[in-house]
Image (cartoon, rainbow, N blue to C red; front, side, top):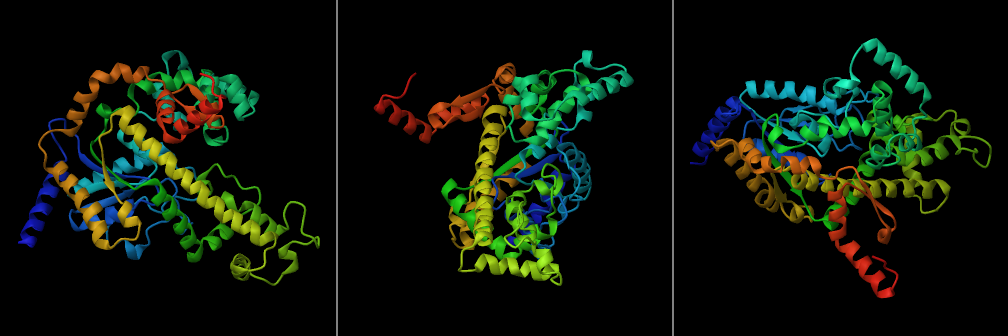
Length: 477
């Protein structure tokens, strides 16, 4: 009986995924999202026992070759024969943009559908997923602006090139320069986000038009809204409570260290590396810079003997140097290198926890602000160390049911989303995405956009601080 049901499911999926079509003619695509550490990859692989599927990786660091432990790539033996695409295929020195991902994923989806399989996009890099699903790239390579920039920005290519060369030569390419040039665009990004600072200033250099004017025009009309989806999408978010995720990602970092993380960061390290491009942007690379500089070169000022480790141990090969790092970490005697290495590992944990919070905020933003219909499944119990039965019952089975219903429904999901959000179109365009708010009560925390500001004000921590300030008489409305 179970075999008959399984074969029927396979037949249904092949028919629906192959046509993937409905009256709008949009193929059906499944997307598994969620914060780091929640179990997205595990779920996608487990779903292969229910559906004929192939996985397209949507993690901006896992697309690169190398740092397999640090980026938590699924080992080949754990992939259980399920085809994985865009996993460890890109040169670590290249910048694989959202546009690159979109163009690659579109071709892969077409190929997967031609094989009567379901394309499943899996990853926590939400701007990759947005780039694939919607027709406009808000923060992507400059080539896209040629199609969407205002008519008064286009014209003779030679003239544009001359304009760009002149303007670029006059820019200092730092946050202060962007803030002086275009405060609205500067308010939208973090002062340390050098990649976007370069991107926005390059936009100005190319077109001579403020980045905020370009990005608030055609982009705001099209980007991110559910009714503009390229595909008929089924979104599943694997989530868990924040305290449980925090504990889990910290334990995962410890397991990564045991599995060879230190060896990987040793191999990729070099002096004066660029942390804004390629694989070196990954959390867990920059955090070890101070330790490796002190370990290999005696820090910026040299060690107490005036020699670096490579001079002290000229016959030591890389493997011996790697083994010595483990000895330093496990040493019961605290010294500069031991403390520095432990601090680096703690920074990786802190930055990973921060990433979890950013991903959760962005998922909420996609749902609340752009109308994405996201189905949540709760992995909290499973991350707490419950049995595999808990994972199957709480995560795999609900997800399987959601996908089965999605593939079999005759009604176009995109039509439904469009109908629900079409009346909100003008309201969406008018929503405040750019204004920068500063919460003095929370230590001058910066919030970007009205939606994020309103969410912050409703948060428990903010309300408790306001209450304490009111009681002390320090709060001023």
